[in-house]
Length: 337
Image (cartoon, rainbow, N blue to C red; front, side, top):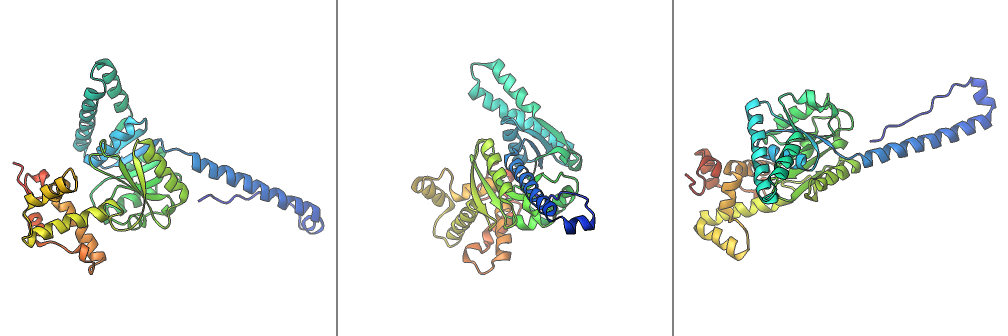
């Protein structure tokens, strides 16, 4: 939103009444002054590139986004409540960069070392989000998929972040509108959904709500492109685009198996060889995390209980209840120990 501007001029009551020419001239001047200032303000907003980024959440997604942003020359502050998590995140980013160097600078070790040093110089860490958002252009959240926690975070940061700062969530399933409701910057709030592993995956879903301004949406699109990603525009609907198609597909694979119409191994092989997918649905579920898949489905069922595509699975619920979340726990639909 561009703030209104008014010119302040002091005239006596009789002057205003008896000097129509002066009044007319002042009105004309005020109108053009307002238009010029409005135009300059709008232009500044449109051309303001996101350079300083604060990423909340030092997990795999947050660290991956931080790596990509730092590699493309952005100044990044990675925030988490735990110092040890942040140290692990920084170490993970450096390790990932070393793997990049092995391929990109195989014959130039000095150039590779310089590349790593340059990228890592763009990354700093902090356990105090409120103290680091004062000069940031974008606050991007990549924390636990819990609406109340996200609302609490953004509600607190809304009080200390500059007016120009854009807020965005990396949520894969929660409505952006609901998260943004805890702030007073509904026009400067959107979604940036990255995919794991962030350095490898080219897609970013850019989500706008009914209140997101066009300037904000354009800035998020431009930021995604500046990261070397390919953005797609999404509405604030369940699952956006990818998960709205992908999760029902994975759930239908489970139901197919539950009905005894195919083994998980045969279903995976069929989709890899028949559809050209790099992973079968059960392999993908184990990679994503069965707890994550269940969380998404539970949220969708609550909002649309009569939709047949969004019905829960007893098999999935049982595995999650047993703590079998997939690769991260060593067992899901398959065993990895």
